[in-house]
Length: 595
Image (cartoon, rainbow, N blue to C red; front, side, top):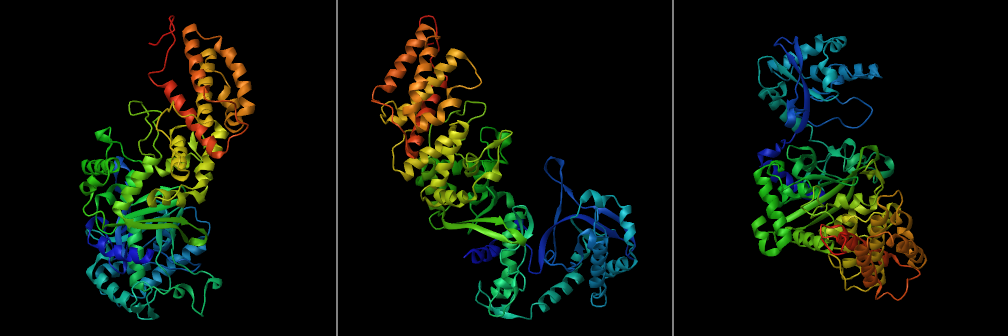
């Protein structure tokens, strides 16, 4: 289903110019340098081919070139009229194996000289002359090779705007040669069902995890082979189909429009697309990563993106009646969500794959944000407001400790990503592991922030079918919720009495108070009486009344709270803290009233 969906996507993307989809036999590659030659093959210059992007940064120039990148293996696999400096020029920065670099150049030269009589092109003859004359030691005279790094380069003839591989004569020869290479190893393609030349090695996929280029279908060991078939003949996919699915996936991952298809979730690289162009497709990745700010016109990518995000948020807030304003026929338009991870030995792992229609996606997103909704700790009037729609990455970040005030994402449990995404996209139960991880993190660092409160509320509502209010519920009588509220008040009283101290009751007692309140609270209440005596009379009376109101329905302190009750304790603490620390917080004055 994955490969078939990508195969179908190729035809759609090929018709949209912004994606710059390569035709069969070609691939879109990032070029960083060009070797400029005179018509007789003498070197004119080696130049930086990068172009200026946003903020003046130099970015690789994306070009369609013949063939695809190097195939895995220990041998040499020179490309045609483009390659890296070690193949094109026999040069490599900080070379630790110069003999291999020399061998790479020789294989590149031999491949091109062997076709000299077949390709009747003056520009191609110039490249052959250059390769015959080139001395490897000359490469060190060009510092540009150190500046651009080990990226790809192409050939160009001085005075010409195009490149040698774009010469019509060269392209005609390549098209014929590419077709001839496909005449062997025919079989029935698993994607199309047609009898066609089968790909021996699958095309490479870019930008998945920290790997450069990998394969999503591969057999690199005899243990994975069967029926005497080697390599990709075990999963017969035609060259044409393999090219199409790989080209489509690479366009989503690393093409010029990848910003609206690709985002990161934990250690997974996620791609999103729809079966036809939609507004949702244009902004879903931006929304999923939280990379939008509608409060500032200048920060939005452009006005069209801004308007689409506004329509998307409107659909999440108001429901089905406004879906048609976002996209036509959302009930019949499919979306696809594919999660990939980098694996060992140049492979790609499939973490998850979901598909459905857009209206189901919007319905489940609305339900998710409804289930996790709680009052924001810092609203839109704050300098750093909490997000109205927390992203999945922000949720996962709360499961891991922080280093230098940043989440240590390497410690996010990888088993949480797929179940969490499925819960959001498909409306299933939230993973219990997520809830447990949040409860453990709260015990470890004694912090109940907005996103953690959202996760707890969502789990209690959806998984345990409990009613949870968005903000402080003074009528709720469960001991766990009441004790969470009480703990927030006792912490506030300590702060008002002693000011800022190194270790308050939250640092010393939160874990025990939320797990074994029968042991912790009697001790905390003894210190509370001491703190209360240091408050001004009006504020002291106010706090005493609040504590009495909270404890009124609590007959005794439970000996222990289970995991669900610990979550309710955290919500009671969060709601009461929010109430105490807002702009309406009661302030002491000589009369003991409110300001």
